[in-house]
Length: 234
Image 1 (cartoon, rainbow, N blue to C red):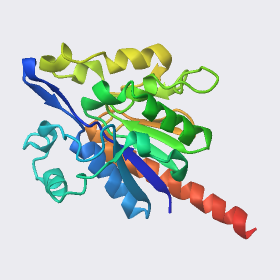
Image 2 (tube, rainbow, N blue to C red):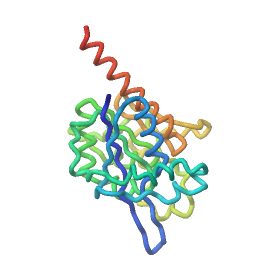
Image 3 (tube, rainbow, N blue to C red):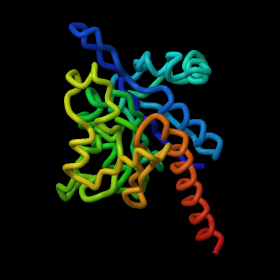
């Protein structure tokens, strides 16, 4: 059974433009369901700890027509998160960064998060991110100074899917930044797109990719555990 840390934005508000965002419900809950079904455990972290702000749109009828994610949210399972600064990275086999526009604001340049990502990666763990979740990976540097995504195939939320009303409010374009450092994949004809950059880096394109993203992460962790068991019993 692997231990996974899910990282969520604490939330962001622009009162002048009446804009509130945070983490995206589907992008947390679908991977968590897949990981738990495979027998793995998931902890939650955010910059401020406590109850992070969910993007209200992700619980709306438009994006959650059956109320599946609202029901999960209302159950309180995402109400308590550990402050990122208090996370013991060496305790985890993987980290996955939940998307939502909030990740662009408070996760992208969080140095404590960059440190956790590095520890997980350098100890052989998996670093995964979905939708806007790759934002902090753009700015994470390894010990040798290389970017953690440099030269890798990656995906993330495409420019042409960004709502027109928020484009001028975002601090940067995720697609543009990913294109600068890696081989960016959008594949608009594919319903769910996930990309393994290498054996340790997994990215997912958008909310609809969350179920496959979760299954891929769970499958990789299970495979690793099975290989370790085989070594143990040989």
